[in-house]
Image 1 (tube, rainbow, N blue to C red):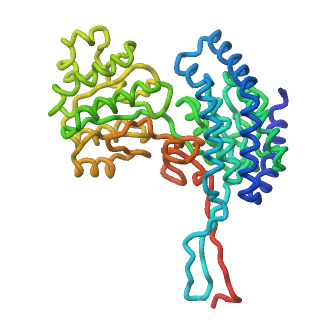
Image 2 (tube, rainbow, N blue to C red):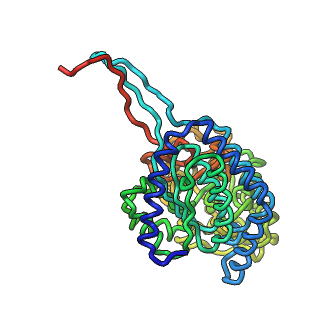
Image 3 (tube, rainbow, N blue to C red):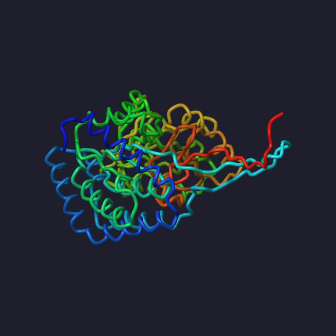
Length: 429
Protein backbone atom coordinates (compact mmCIF):
# COMPACT_ATOMS: atom_id res chain seq x y z
CA UNK A 1 0.00 0.00 0.00
CA UNK A 2 1.15 3.53 -0.64
CA UNK A 3 0.02 6.99 0.36
CA UNK A 4 1.86 9.11 -2.23
CA UNK A 5 -0.31 8.03 -5.17
CA UNK A 6 1.18 10.43 -7.70
CA UNK A 7 4.76 9.30 -7.05
CA UNK A 8 3.70 5.66 -6.96
CA UNK A 9 1.90 5.86 -10.31
CA UNK A 10 4.79 7.70 -11.94
CA UNK A 11 7.07 4.87 -10.81
CA UNK A 12 4.64 2.22 -12.07
CA UNK A 13 4.35 3.99 -15.41
CA UNK A 14 8.10 4.30 -15.91
CA UNK A 15 8.63 0.65 -14.98
CA UNK A 16 5.95 -0.42 -17.47
CA UNK A 17 7.45 1.69 -20.27
CA UNK A 18 10.89 0.21 -19.67
CA UNK A 19 9.45 -3.31 -19.58
CA UNK A 20 7.46 -2.73 -22.77
CA UNK A 21 10.63 -2.19 -24.78
CA UNK A 22 12.05 -5.53 -23.66
CA UNK A 23 8.75 -7.33 -24.26
CA UNK A 24 8.46 -5.86 -27.75
CA UNK A 25 11.82 -7.43 -28.57
CA UNK A 26 11.06 -10.80 -26.93
CA UNK A 27 10.80 -13.84 -29.19
CA UNK A 28 7.66 -15.92 -29.54
CA UNK A 29 9.46 -18.75 -27.75
CA UNK A 30 10.33 -16.51 -24.79
CA UNK A 31 6.77 -15.23 -24.47
CA UNK A 32 5.18 -18.67 -24.75
CA UNK A 33 7.62 -20.09 -22.22
CA UNK A 34 6.70 -17.32 -19.78
CA UNK A 35 3.00 -18.05 -20.19
CA UNK A 36 3.53 -21.76 -19.52
CA UNK A 37 5.72 -21.09 -16.49
CA UNK A 38 2.98 -18.81 -15.12
CA UNK A 39 0.46 -21.59 -15.82
CA UNK A 40 2.48 -24.01 -13.69
CA UNK A 41 2.85 -21.47 -10.88
CA UNK A 42 -0.88 -20.77 -10.77
CA UNK A 43 -1.88 -24.43 -11.03
CA UNK A 44 0.31 -25.24 -8.02
CA UNK A 45 -1.12 -22.28 -6.11
CA UNK A 46 -4.79 -23.04 -6.79
CA UNK A 47 -5.69 -23.53 -3.13
CA UNK A 48 -4.03 -20.24 -2.13
CA UNK A 49 -5.82 -18.30 -4.85
CA UNK A 50 -9.22 -19.80 -4.08
CA UNK A 51 -8.66 -19.03 -0.39
CA UNK A 52 -7.92 -15.41 -1.27
CA UNK A 53 -11.07 -15.34 -3.40
CA UNK A 54 -13.10 -16.62 -0.45
CA UNK A 55 -11.92 -13.65 1.60
CA UNK A 56 -13.16 -11.33 -1.16
CA UNK A 57 -16.47 -13.21 -1.39
CA UNK A 58 -17.01 -13.03 2.37
CA UNK A 59 -16.19 -9.32 2.38
CA UNK A 60 -18.52 -8.78 -0.57
CA UNK A 61 -21.43 -10.44 1.19
CA UNK A 62 -20.79 -8.39 4.32
CA UNK A 63 -20.73 -5.25 2.17
CA UNK A 64 -24.02 -6.26 0.51
CA UNK A 65 -22.68 -6.51 -3.02
CA UNK A 66 -25.50 -7.37 -5.40
CA UNK A 67 -25.90 -10.85 -6.85
CA UNK A 68 -24.47 -9.91 -10.27
CA UNK A 69 -21.27 -8.51 -8.74
CA UNK A 70 -20.86 -11.53 -6.47
CA UNK A 71 -21.32 -13.83 -9.44
CA UNK A 72 -18.59 -12.03 -11.37
CA UNK A 73 -16.33 -12.03 -8.32
CA UNK A 74 -16.51 -15.73 -7.50
CA UNK A 75 -13.77 -18.11 -8.63
CA UNK A 76 -15.25 -21.58 -8.59
CA UNK A 77 -13.19 -24.67 -9.40
CA UNK A 78 -14.49 -24.77 -13.00
CA UNK A 79 -13.88 -21.04 -13.48
CA UNK A 80 -10.35 -21.36 -12.13
CA UNK A 81 -9.62 -24.24 -14.47
CA UNK A 82 -11.13 -22.33 -17.41
CA UNK A 83 -8.99 -19.31 -16.51
CA UNK A 84 -5.84 -21.44 -16.66
CA UNK A 85 -6.96 -23.11 -19.88
CA UNK A 86 -7.28 -19.65 -21.38
CA UNK A 87 -3.62 -19.08 -20.55
CA UNK A 88 -2.64 -22.22 -22.48
CA UNK A 89 -4.90 -21.22 -25.34
CA UNK A 90 -3.16 -17.85 -25.64
CA UNK A 91 0.24 -19.55 -25.63
CA UNK A 92 -0.91 -21.76 -28.51
CA UNK A 93 -2.11 -18.86 -30.64
CA UNK A 94 0.01 -17.52 -33.52
CA UNK A 95 2.16 -14.58 -32.49
CA UNK A 96 1.02 -11.51 -34.44
CA UNK A 97 4.12 -9.45 -33.66
CA UNK A 98 6.49 -9.00 -36.57
CA UNK A 99 3.95 -10.19 -39.15
CA UNK A 100 4.53 -8.37 -42.44
CA UNK A 101 1.65 -7.89 -44.86
CA UNK A 102 0.72 -5.97 -48.01
CA UNK A 103 4.21 -6.00 -49.50
CA UNK A 104 4.28 -4.26 -52.85
CA UNK A 105 6.76 -2.59 -55.21
CA UNK A 106 6.27 1.09 -56.02
CA UNK A 107 7.23 2.70 -59.36
CA UNK A 108 10.11 4.43 -57.55
CA UNK A 109 11.72 1.04 -56.87
CA UNK A 110 11.07 0.91 -53.13
CA UNK A 111 9.29 -2.09 -51.64
CA UNK A 112 6.55 -1.16 -49.18
CA UNK A 113 4.64 -3.13 -46.52
CA UNK A 114 3.19 -3.13 -43.02
CA UNK A 115 4.56 -4.77 -39.88
CA UNK A 116 2.41 -5.62 -36.84
CA UNK A 117 3.82 -4.16 -33.60
CA UNK A 118 2.72 -3.90 -29.94
CA UNK A 119 0.82 -0.87 -28.71
CA UNK A 120 3.35 -0.46 -25.87
CA UNK A 121 1.83 -0.03 -22.40
CA UNK A 122 -1.79 -0.94 -21.72
CA UNK A 123 -3.60 0.36 -18.65
CA UNK A 124 -6.64 -1.64 -17.62
CA UNK A 125 -9.29 -0.70 -15.05
CA UNK A 126 -11.87 -3.34 -14.25
CA UNK A 127 -14.33 -4.52 -11.63
CA UNK A 128 -15.08 -7.77 -9.87
CA UNK A 129 -13.75 -10.51 -12.13
CA UNK A 130 -10.36 -11.79 -10.92
CA UNK A 131 -10.05 -14.01 -14.00
CA UNK A 132 -9.66 -10.79 -16.01
CA UNK A 133 -6.32 -10.23 -14.26
CA UNK A 134 -4.88 -13.34 -15.86
CA UNK A 135 -6.67 -12.96 -19.20
CA UNK A 136 -5.40 -9.43 -19.65
CA UNK A 137 -1.88 -10.28 -18.51
CA UNK A 138 -1.62 -13.24 -20.90
CA UNK A 139 -2.86 -11.27 -23.90
CA UNK A 140 -0.56 -8.36 -23.13
CA UNK A 141 2.49 -10.61 -22.77
CA UNK A 142 1.80 -12.60 -25.93
CA UNK A 143 1.32 -9.40 -27.93
CA UNK A 144 4.54 -7.88 -26.58
CA UNK A 145 2.89 -5.24 -24.39
CA UNK A 146 3.44 -4.28 -20.79
CA UNK A 147 0.25 -3.90 -18.76
CA UNK A 148 -0.82 -2.02 -15.63
CA UNK A 149 -3.87 -3.58 -13.98
CA UNK A 150 -6.17 -1.86 -11.53
CA UNK A 151 -8.87 -4.24 -10.34
CA UNK A 152 -11.82 -3.38 -8.13
CA UNK A 153 -11.38 -3.19 -4.38
CA UNK A 154 -13.90 -6.02 -3.99
CA UNK A 155 -11.42 -8.40 -5.72
CA UNK A 156 -8.24 -7.06 -4.11
CA UNK A 157 -7.15 -10.25 -2.35
CA UNK A 158 -7.82 -12.44 -5.40
CA UNK A 159 -5.97 -10.10 -7.75
CA UNK A 160 -2.95 -9.79 -5.48
CA UNK A 161 -2.74 -13.57 -5.12
CA UNK A 162 -2.84 -14.06 -8.91
CA UNK A 163 -0.33 -11.23 -9.41
CA UNK A 164 2.13 -12.86 -7.01
CA UNK A 165 2.43 -15.96 -9.19
CA UNK A 166 2.49 -14.02 -12.47
CA UNK A 167 5.46 -12.07 -11.08
CA UNK A 168 7.22 -15.28 -10.04
CA UNK A 169 6.62 -16.75 -13.48
CA UNK A 170 8.00 -13.71 -15.30
CA UNK A 171 11.15 -13.72 -13.19
CA UNK A 172 11.71 -17.44 -13.71
CA UNK A 173 11.17 -17.09 -17.47
CA UNK A 174 13.66 -14.23 -17.73
CA UNK A 175 11.19 -11.54 -18.85
CA UNK A 176 10.83 -8.15 -17.12
CA UNK A 177 9.05 -8.48 -13.78
CA UNK A 178 7.34 -5.15 -14.39
CA UNK A 179 5.78 -6.41 -17.62
CA UNK A 180 2.64 -7.07 -15.56
CA UNK A 181 1.90 -4.78 -12.63
CA UNK A 182 -1.22 -5.13 -10.50
CA UNK A 183 -1.64 -1.94 -8.50
CA UNK A 184 -1.13 -2.48 -4.79
CA UNK A 185 -3.56 0.20 -3.71
CA UNK A 186 -7.34 0.52 -3.66
CA UNK A 187 -7.15 4.32 -3.59
CA UNK A 188 -9.38 5.66 -6.36
CA UNK A 189 -6.89 8.45 -6.98
CA UNK A 190 -4.72 5.82 -8.68
CA UNK A 191 -7.31 5.55 -11.47
CA UNK A 192 -7.19 9.29 -12.07
CA UNK A 193 -3.40 9.12 -12.30
CA UNK A 194 -3.37 6.08 -14.59
CA UNK A 195 -5.73 7.53 -17.20
CA UNK A 196 -3.60 10.67 -17.49
CA UNK A 197 -0.16 9.00 -17.69
CA UNK A 198 0.41 10.14 -21.26
CA UNK A 199 4.20 9.86 -20.95
CA UNK A 200 4.01 6.16 -20.21
CA UNK A 201 0.64 4.62 -21.12
CA UNK A 202 -0.48 4.12 -24.73
CA UNK A 203 -4.07 2.93 -24.28
CA UNK A 204 -6.63 2.48 -21.49
CA UNK A 205 -9.12 -0.39 -21.40
CA UNK A 206 -11.94 0.05 -18.88
CA UNK A 207 -14.02 -3.04 -18.16
CA UNK A 208 -16.91 -2.79 -15.74
CA UNK A 209 -20.16 -0.97 -15.11
CA UNK A 210 -21.46 1.87 -17.23
CA UNK A 211 -20.62 4.45 -14.56
CA UNK A 212 -16.98 3.41 -14.42
CA UNK A 213 -16.58 3.42 -18.19
CA UNK A 214 -18.30 6.79 -18.60
CA UNK A 215 -15.98 8.29 -16.01
CA UNK A 216 -12.88 6.88 -17.70
CA UNK A 217 -14.05 7.99 -21.15
CA UNK A 218 -14.77 11.53 -19.93
CA UNK A 219 -11.59 12.04 -17.89
CA UNK A 220 -8.92 10.06 -19.73
CA UNK A 221 -6.13 11.82 -21.58
CA UNK A 222 -4.88 8.47 -22.89
CA UNK A 223 -6.84 6.84 -25.78
CA UNK A 224 -9.59 4.47 -24.57
CA UNK A 225 -10.90 1.15 -25.95
CA UNK A 226 -14.34 0.62 -24.44
CA UNK A 227 -17.96 -0.39 -24.45
CA UNK A 228 -20.46 1.34 -22.16
CA UNK A 229 -23.01 -1.43 -21.67
CA UNK A 230 -24.45 -4.57 -23.19
CA UNK A 231 -28.08 -4.00 -24.10
CA UNK A 232 -28.29 -7.08 -26.31
CA UNK A 233 -31.34 -8.12 -28.37
CA UNK A 234 -32.71 -11.32 -29.83
CA UNK A 235 -35.21 -10.85 -32.65
CA UNK A 236 -37.57 -13.76 -33.43
CA UNK A 237 -38.43 -13.41 -37.10
CA UNK A 238 -41.65 -14.65 -38.73
CA UNK A 239 -39.54 -17.32 -40.48
CA UNK A 240 -37.86 -18.54 -37.30
CA UNK A 241 -37.49 -22.22 -36.49
CA UNK A 242 -39.61 -22.53 -33.30
CA UNK A 243 -37.26 -24.97 -31.58
CA UNK A 244 -34.23 -22.77 -32.24
CA UNK A 245 -36.16 -19.68 -31.13
CA UNK A 246 -36.93 -21.22 -27.75
CA UNK A 247 -33.52 -22.81 -27.18
CA UNK A 248 -31.48 -19.73 -28.12
CA UNK A 249 -33.69 -17.30 -26.18
CA UNK A 250 -33.45 -19.35 -22.98
CA UNK A 251 -29.68 -19.62 -23.21
CA UNK A 252 -29.16 -15.97 -24.17
CA UNK A 253 -31.07 -14.80 -21.10
CA UNK A 254 -30.57 -17.39 -18.36
CA UNK A 255 -27.07 -18.81 -18.93
CA UNK A 256 -25.54 -16.01 -16.84
CA UNK A 257 -26.92 -12.63 -15.79
CA UNK A 258 -23.81 -10.67 -14.89
CA UNK A 259 -22.29 -10.60 -18.37
CA UNK A 260 -22.39 -7.94 -21.06
CA UNK A 261 -23.47 -10.42 -23.76
CA UNK A 262 -26.66 -11.54 -21.98
CA UNK A 263 -29.93 -10.83 -23.81
CA UNK A 264 -31.83 -7.95 -22.20
CA UNK A 265 -34.60 -7.42 -24.78
CA UNK A 266 -36.57 -10.02 -26.74
CA UNK A 267 -38.26 -8.81 -29.94
CA UNK A 268 -40.90 -11.06 -31.53
CA UNK A 269 -42.47 -10.59 -34.96
CA UNK A 270 -46.19 -10.16 -34.45
CA UNK A 271 -46.88 -12.66 -37.25
CA UNK A 272 -45.67 -15.47 -34.95
CA UNK A 273 -46.04 -13.87 -31.53
CA UNK A 274 -49.32 -15.59 -30.58
CA UNK A 275 -47.77 -18.99 -31.19
CA UNK A 276 -44.11 -18.55 -30.21
CA UNK A 277 -44.10 -15.95 -27.43
CA UNK A 278 -45.91 -18.14 -24.84
CA UNK A 279 -43.54 -21.03 -25.55
CA UNK A 280 -40.46 -18.83 -25.13
CA UNK A 281 -41.78 -17.09 -22.02
CA UNK A 282 -42.73 -20.37 -20.34
CA UNK A 283 -39.34 -21.92 -21.15
CA UNK A 284 -37.52 -18.92 -19.68
CA UNK A 285 -39.62 -19.11 -16.48
CA UNK A 286 -38.93 -22.85 -16.32
CA UNK A 287 -35.21 -22.07 -16.47
CA UNK A 288 -35.45 -19.48 -13.68
CA UNK A 289 -38.56 -18.99 -11.58
CA UNK A 290 -37.17 -15.64 -10.35
CA UNK A 291 -37.43 -14.13 -13.84
CA UNK A 292 -39.49 -10.97 -14.32
CA UNK A 293 -40.89 -10.20 -17.77
CA UNK A 294 -41.55 -6.56 -18.68
CA UNK A 295 -44.02 -6.42 -21.55
CA UNK A 296 -45.25 -3.93 -24.13
CA UNK A 297 -49.01 -3.76 -24.68
CA UNK A 298 -49.10 -6.42 -27.42
CA UNK A 299 -46.95 -8.89 -25.49
CA UNK A 300 -49.08 -8.31 -22.40
CA UNK A 301 -52.26 -9.06 -24.35
CA UNK A 302 -50.78 -12.41 -25.41
CA UNK A 303 -49.35 -13.47 -22.04
CA UNK A 304 -51.50 -11.90 -19.34
CA UNK A 305 -53.93 -14.83 -19.03
CA UNK A 306 -51.20 -17.48 -18.97
CA UNK A 307 -51.49 -19.09 -15.53
CA UNK A 308 -47.91 -20.37 -15.60
CA UNK A 309 -46.62 -16.81 -15.92
CA UNK A 310 -48.68 -15.36 -13.07
CA UNK A 311 -46.55 -13.18 -10.82
CA UNK A 312 -43.82 -12.81 -13.44
CA UNK A 313 -45.37 -10.09 -15.64
CA UNK A 314 -45.31 -6.31 -15.48
CA UNK A 315 -45.70 -3.40 -17.89
CA UNK A 316 -42.59 -2.17 -19.68
CA UNK A 317 -41.73 1.51 -19.49
CA UNK A 318 -39.81 3.54 -22.05
CA UNK A 319 -36.62 3.15 -20.02
CA UNK A 320 -36.78 -0.65 -20.20
CA UNK A 321 -35.80 -0.61 -23.89
CA UNK A 322 -32.53 1.13 -22.99
CA UNK A 323 -31.59 -0.85 -19.89
CA UNK A 324 -28.88 -3.43 -19.26
CA UNK A 325 -30.35 -5.28 -16.30
CA UNK A 326 -27.59 -7.77 -15.42
CA UNK A 327 -30.38 -9.51 -13.52
CA UNK A 328 -33.30 -11.94 -14.07
CA UNK A 329 -35.36 -9.29 -15.87
CA UNK A 330 -36.27 -9.40 -19.55
CA UNK A 331 -38.00 -6.75 -21.65
CA UNK A 332 -40.28 -8.16 -24.37
CA UNK A 333 -41.75 -6.30 -27.33
CA UNK A 334 -43.94 -7.53 -30.17
CA UNK A 335 -42.74 -5.84 -33.33
CA UNK A 336 -43.98 -5.34 -36.89
CA UNK A 337 -41.35 -7.22 -38.87
CA UNK A 338 -37.70 -6.92 -39.79
CA UNK A 339 -37.59 -3.20 -40.55
CA UNK A 340 -39.10 -2.36 -37.17
CA UNK A 341 -36.70 -4.75 -35.41
CA UNK A 342 -33.62 -3.23 -37.05
CA UNK A 343 -34.86 0.27 -36.25
CA UNK A 344 -35.54 -0.64 -32.61
CA UNK A 345 -32.11 -2.21 -32.15
CA UNK A 346 -30.23 0.66 -33.79
CA UNK A 347 -32.22 3.14 -31.69
CA UNK A 348 -32.09 1.46 -28.28
CA UNK A 349 -29.16 -0.97 -28.48
CA UNK A 350 -25.64 -0.41 -27.23
CA UNK A 351 -23.88 -1.67 -30.39
CA UNK A 352 -22.68 -4.75 -28.52
CA UNK A 353 -24.35 -7.99 -29.70
CA UNK A 354 -27.65 -8.59 -31.46
CA UNK A 355 -29.24 -11.75 -32.83
CA UNK A 356 -31.82 -12.74 -35.45
CA UNK A 357 -33.57 -16.11 -35.36
CA UNK A 358 -34.72 -16.92 -38.90
CA UNK A 359 -34.56 -19.50 -41.67
CA UNK A 360 -34.94 -16.75 -44.28
CA UNK A 361 -31.54 -16.11 -45.88
CA UNK A 362 -32.41 -12.71 -47.34
CA UNK A 363 -33.68 -11.42 -44.00
CA UNK A 364 -30.65 -12.74 -42.16
CA UNK A 365 -28.31 -10.97 -44.57
CA UNK A 366 -30.18 -7.69 -44.23
CA UNK A 367 -29.99 -8.01 -40.44
CA UNK A 368 -26.23 -8.55 -40.30
CA UNK A 369 -25.63 -5.73 -42.80
CA UNK A 370 -27.93 -3.15 -41.25
CA UNK A 371 -27.69 -3.74 -37.49
CA UNK A 372 -24.90 -1.47 -36.29
CA UNK A 373 -23.32 -3.63 -33.58
CA UNK A 374 -19.87 -5.05 -32.94
CA UNK A 375 -21.22 -8.63 -33.11
CA UNK A 376 -24.29 -9.63 -35.14
CA UNK A 377 -25.48 -13.24 -35.10
CA UNK A 378 -27.86 -15.55 -36.95
CA UNK A 379 -29.53 -18.41 -35.06
CA UNK A 380 -27.05 -18.42 -32.18
CA UNK A 381 -27.02 -17.20 -28.58
CA UNK A 382 -25.60 -13.75 -27.84
CA UNK A 383 -23.57 -15.45 -25.11
CA UNK A 384 -21.08 -16.46 -27.82
CA UNK A 385 -19.82 -12.85 -28.06
CA UNK A 386 -16.69 -13.66 -26.13
CA UNK A 387 -12.98 -13.82 -26.88
CA UNK A 388 -12.67 -17.48 -25.87
CA UNK A 389 -15.65 -18.52 -28.00
CA UNK A 390 -14.29 -16.49 -30.94
CA UNK A 391 -11.02 -18.40 -30.81
CA UNK A 392 -9.02 -15.49 -29.41
CA UNK A 393 -7.87 -17.54 -26.42
CA UNK A 394 -9.13 -14.81 -24.12
CA UNK A 395 -10.14 -11.17 -24.39
CA UNK A 396 -9.02 -7.99 -22.75
CA UNK A 397 -12.52 -6.57 -23.23
CA UNK A 398 -15.26 -5.81 -25.70
CA UNK A 399 -15.08 -2.72 -27.87
CA UNK A 400 -18.09 -1.04 -29.44
CA UNK A 401 -15.87 1.69 -30.87
CA UNK A 402 -15.39 1.79 -34.64
CA UNK A 403 -11.76 2.87 -34.68
CA UNK A 404 -8.86 0.47 -34.08
CA UNK A 405 -10.71 -2.49 -32.49
CA UNK A 406 -14.33 -3.67 -32.45
CA UNK A 407 -15.97 -6.60 -30.68
CA UNK A 408 -13.93 -8.92 -28.43
CA UNK A 409 -10.39 -7.54 -28.23
CA UNK A 410 -7.75 -10.26 -28.40
CA UNK A 411 -4.13 -10.29 -29.51
CA UNK A 412 -4.57 -8.32 -32.75
CA UNK A 413 -6.59 -5.68 -30.90
CA UNK A 414 -3.52 -4.99 -28.75
CA UNK A 415 -1.33 -4.33 -31.77
CA UNK A 416 -0.88 -1.65 -34.38
CA UNK A 417 0.95 -1.55 -37.70
CA UNK A 418 3.82 0.49 -38.95
CA UNK A 419 4.93 1.04 -42.53
CA UNK A 420 8.20 -0.57 -43.54
CA UNK A 421 10.19 0.33 -46.65
CA UNK A 422 12.98 -1.64 -48.37
CA UNK A 423 15.15 0.37 -50.69
CA UNK A 424 18.28 0.02 -52.81
CA UNK A 425 19.52 3.60 -52.77
CA UNK A 426 16.35 5.15 -54.26
CA UNK A 427 15.94 8.89 -53.87
CA UNK A 428 12.87 10.98 -54.53
CA UNK A 429 13.04 13.15 -57.59
